[in-house]
Length: 145
Image 1 (cartoon, rainbow, N blue to C red):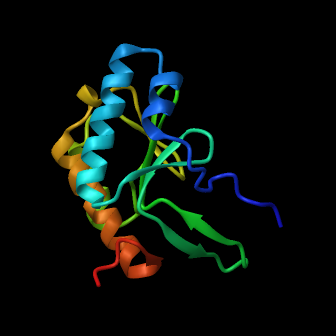
Image 2 (image 1 turned 45 degrees about the horizontal axis):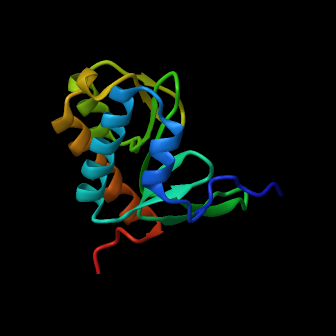
């Protein structure tokens, strides 16, 4: 079975943003996302793989037997768009998307160009919904003790 690339690396998050993100607006948005996701997750930012900034962690196991660890919330400031790893496929999340703003969705993440394209209150609600879903379905750092 293939080893997952999305693992905790220990790389410094601030150094990563300063060296990886060239666009000044994307850099400012990255630091704002770090602040917001840290606040909402109550977890310090950590690097997962070469370019994902993650908050908290959980262990997943699929019916196929594939298992691993992943951040509870995360994002990557890629050149074309931010990849947001903040979404859980729940009815509440689906309803929230109507007021989220300009984004694209894939199976694993949401893509936004800049923070001003989205409603930050909806981002917060989506993050909390994802934290709740992960807490209910996985062993995670987000579980209320």
